[in-house]
Length: 617
Image (cartoon, rainbow, N blue to C red; front, top):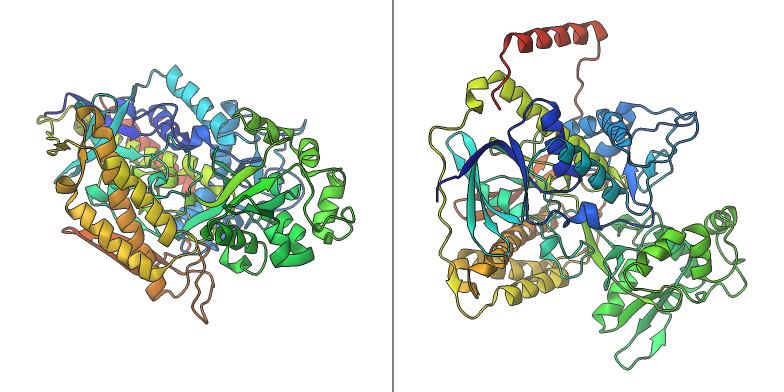
């Protein structure tokens, strides 16, 4: 099938990164663009949050000092981070944040325009801010309005299945209609992948059910991956997928385990004794599982997972106080006691304290048919964020020319990251990609015209018959959660890798669907399989070479360390073989900061652009 239409750049995804990429491209003069999405209302940006979803940026209030380089150092210190990414995300943070403010995202400020901050995890200052539980949803909606006002086309209901490449890099994109399976092919010079993390490879996950991830698109195109072993896992509800961080923990709910016979017990108190309430409190802002806290608040995650592996079901109960609060808060440590006292919450039951401290957290569950005043929440330790992703350069371009990745799809986060830095990254990465594309568009005006030969793509032969794609995907996800989540089994991962590798190699002969209307399910399974294979490769490499697993999961070998990582794990695909290896991270750049030099450089750039005709769009 030959391409039916030409766009200079196609953005895949309608979340914070995708909408911002299109909006910024338009503002930079690249107008022949389109957004492709399998569902405009799907994805993590629009459908997830937490008790107060955090946006991390340079401090913009108070008397405490801060600087771009200090923020960059914080991002870099997490380990496994490239210096150019840390510096760019720090330097662009204020510009990107204020753009969101101007678009109407309701970040709180005082009457003089200072944007209030608070301390988040892995944050030495108070750089975090929030618009409430739905910060990323508000960001998505504001950016969508801006895109809609510009008339940028959004091609809804199309699942991207293949990034087409030629000798010069990207030259097209192939899609299928998610309802009919009808193919569509577009010619383009660039693709910006803004599809979020690989949400479809785990059973125990807090990613919304509407998000599947498309990391496999980049893998299939030949792009390298970075740090795919580095994930964040944390306690979340399972019926309605939501992170249970912040005040959900700080109000000190009961953790109860129910065995198959219906017998209930407070297992945290059994294991931790009087310190159990303090450990629960600390989970509030130490929410992601962290090996460095395996003897502290992360004991809660380990104990929850242990109960579930025993065949029990685990719940958070807000209707009654946990064991350890029998003397009405007197046994609490000073950190938890002082926090609750300052919040005016040294009273009542967990649900009453939650009503006082964060009533929106209750209303959120009520909107999904769950009454925290009356019923407990079933929970698990779930995959929440992939700190790895597609390997990108300083402009968020992958190893494939013309293919960019931004947001969680890009592997820029490293081992540890401050809470909320992912939202900043959606804006910075997509802007950097747009700037690079716009620069090249101005320098190569003749290349913006429709190509003389449009690319072609033929769908693979899909087996129709008794469907097994859904079952294979369920099994893949269950096996990943069993062997390759935060508490990993290296032998199990190796055996699973062989099974997944076999599925990838024999995919066409193994997988069948009912008919063309199920083509989307076929390609989602393919994407999940090749992504899981790459992820397992990185995990096995990390386990066997580094000897530690960063923040992602427990290394049970004696003598393992958890020092800051000065390396990253790269995963490449060479003639059908997946290979992962350890590579050093780049140093923090030391760019020119002399004003007169930069002013002269700016003048010369403006003059050069002024001599070039505007590209045809």
